[in-house]
Image (cartoon, rainbow, N blue to C red):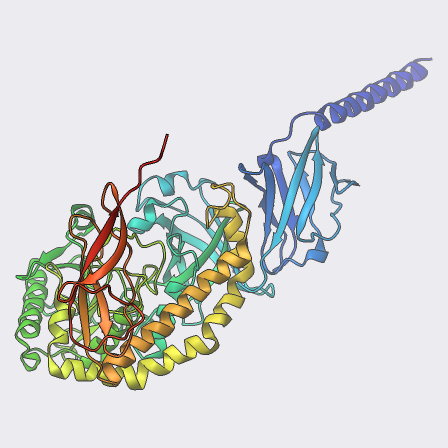
Length: 598
């Protein structure tokens, strides 16, 4: 009897437990599920990886951005806040079961008592970089420039091969204007050196967001051009799909850092000697920029120079470096380059990169120079220009403001070597015959073949490589602000137009430089006088035998711009006629604005 009672009690308890578990499962399945609760477990690269969905607030859809190594046919497990079941495209998935093919496009996910429209997108040809921060968040890192924390990383090639993996000593935010963007750049310092770019093991890697370049290509194009031209220590780079703490962060460009040391700028710094090797860069005269510099000096020509290496120079070393630079500046300004040993070839190649790209920062920032220690055996005490850095504002970038006195979308014109009140080094050098002759020779023999290579297929190759990654980035960051402006999504047309812009700019830039350097055509600037009106660009570049390109129209309150007339003849100027090499001034003519009739 007692045995029967015991068995009945156990059976009753089991029934209660089953009822409880069933009720609990029923209850759990009907509780709200947040997007942040949903995790997709994908295969590839030797291990399963968890990816979270990204919610698009504009269209109220969820996006699953998949790396290149993830085959659509592989499917994925879905974890929805610990719930055992989810329904994918009408198919109920039990614990551990996978979805069907994760094809691109919209899918329906049911979890708990919620339904989600999930848009699947695949990358195809670029590696994926997975980062996990120690806090599980980017909040602190992105709070202030320089903030950082440790973590883990793994870089996986498009074919699933693991390129590198290990611990991150510090992932920190970086950049100047780019730090202020929503998509931020980072620096990744590894605990153990690794070769992530095929150029040897390194400790520091830069993750460029390219937020101010809708093509995502300009930095890569200019870095590779400099490398092909033989400018020493030009940084290697490639694109990656970046995932941080299981969340897709966009298409990034992972690059070597401009620094001294093994595999980078091979000079002797941090020595006890006063006459140390050094790496410096020019900087804008902005208080916030200079406040971040640990050590800098200003030349007699008001040029700010930041000492990057040695990282902690002595007062004697600072004096030596500043005096060395002053000697160089004096030699450049007087045209007596024989008074100071600079490497003409590296200076000419660095200048060409600035001029070919018509770089906004050409005379102000990210202009690096280096010199080896004075007592280094077997090395001449030369000052070298380079490496290159920061070229998102080049090649006619349409995001450069039109409120500047120079039209950076216009392919014509000498800019890097133009005279500026607070930055004249390239201008002063350009006046020296020996430097100018070296520039022309390097342009003809070194730069032109590289430009032609870019135009004859290399830029298109970059486009094909990054296309799917750029498409995912376009959705994640609303690159052309189509969502924001409630416009139809046109990634393919808009992105191809951006690539075409680069190719057109580079083609016309080549034509202009050929005209003045190889064909010897007269080059002037024509003055456009807006009278009482206003316009930002008042000088237009003119090349003998070429037509003028009209500037942006001036504005005058109460009037509309009508046409331009020659100041000397009063004739309406015909922009289809070619310039004969004799400069003149054009004046604006306005018509009174018609008042709207009531």
